[in-house]
Image 1 (tube, rainbow, N blue to C red):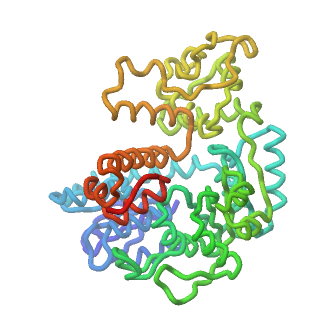
Image 2: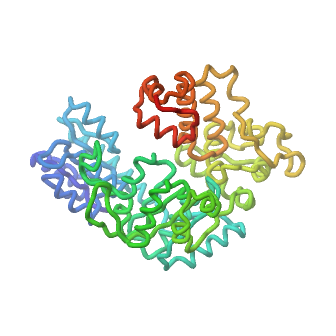
Length: 487
């Protein structure tokens, strides 16, 4: 068992805890400041970390943040003043196991450290040995082809383009490619390029220098620098703005880049894995994606099959997700009856594996009883299907994307109720980027309505909406709104 670390600038507190834990037969190691512990965390890990919150130099919260970043499962106990409620709240928000309020009873302190120790040892014993937990589940021939491709690429640093529908597990494949590559010991950094606003994406990718723009108060490392020596996964690459595609191409070609506002080149030793659900060839023809970047990314292509092409994998995936969901909630896992499993295997599931995972989470929380029948599934899935019908005798093969029919007993309450219903429908269908889609629709409706109200005068509309002229001009272009004119 590893020692318990005690970090406190007060020598008397260190001495009391050392002696009390020694009587319990527990090994300790003490530090008079957070910096000493931070330096040692790079090479060693305690079984439990006990730290004062206020010390000269780095604080206990700084140490907590660093410990959680490097070792998420490490229990950290923060020592704080009895009256310092803000510190206690900050400790829990930072992921502390618990906190000790000064002055503390030594027996209660030892009991708390004992609890943290038991938690730490239990987590260590429950961790699966490397390679035991499956990274990607699938027995279907289409998935076996994917597994074979990952194996062939295991010793390669070549750029890979993963294509597949939303929710089919493209990031899992990217992580597996990284894990089985020569870069496995280095960072894996993922970025969904469609989820970051265009104005922020350049800084997110390449970082920025201090003062590069309003609000840039310090130099910031971008995802390329964070992934140095490892793998950068760029999801939904087909949605990347055209001007940023040029910068990405330059990095892939030259192996270096410039931070926003910077003048010194930064070397990039990064393997890029890209993914998209879009037809990149068509986007090249539509002049929405650079052809030279497409060829640079499309060195090796992996197509991830949708769930409807690997229906035989649905039972094993469903059992896995039900077990995973039950473990997260601390409950007994639900079991699907044979009829319910056949029914699920016949569904279209347009949201693919993500939709199936969400459905299993719903079943764990909402379905009555331990054995789940067809009638216990969400009503929007089962409407129109004979309950518990064998496959092929009335079981539906397609699922309409409709709001759950049994969840609202009254009409939606105004536009917010309609928004809630639409969001619930999209989430139930496993649709990706729900906030982005609905946000764009919301902005489009507001701007179009304001333009009608001001007879197309965009500057007047911006004033009425409470936004800037540059903002409304950019939004009109991004959303493809017609009929606007300068005042």
